[in-house]
Length: 160
Image (cartoon, rainbow, N blue to C red; front, side):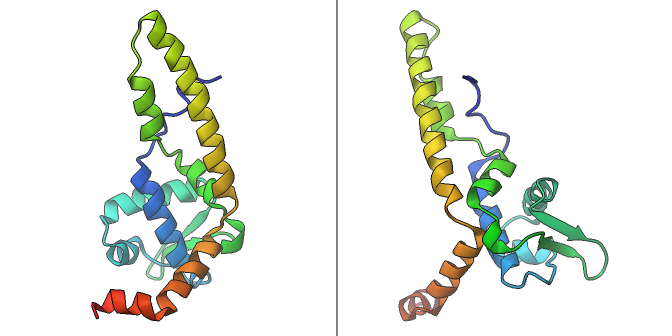
């Protein structure tokens, strides 16, 4: 068992921003969208979003196009990109997993508990990945479109 498996390289916020950006890009898969437009739509920092998008490009989920009509676009059909794949590409850190292990000490009981916590958090990670593997960017896009068309959702967004 890898003891430090729980420590990823990116903040969990990246996962949420990545999923939202991918849903936006899935709406018109043939077009590209610049990071500045995505950042404005998500009300996020353009620099942060570019880092996230660069990671998704390296992971093979997105492709980039240079020039005046440049930007990002999905490399595959949104129905084929699982949330687990995005999570894996981003190597999201898990604060609960890291935090729970940090509560143990270097004394014998603490080390026993750390081993137990590692087993527990490994099972939690497997379970979460299994759930994420059942959903795709296409599923999220369909759900977002459905929610946008519901009268209650429109009332919430218009402040009525």
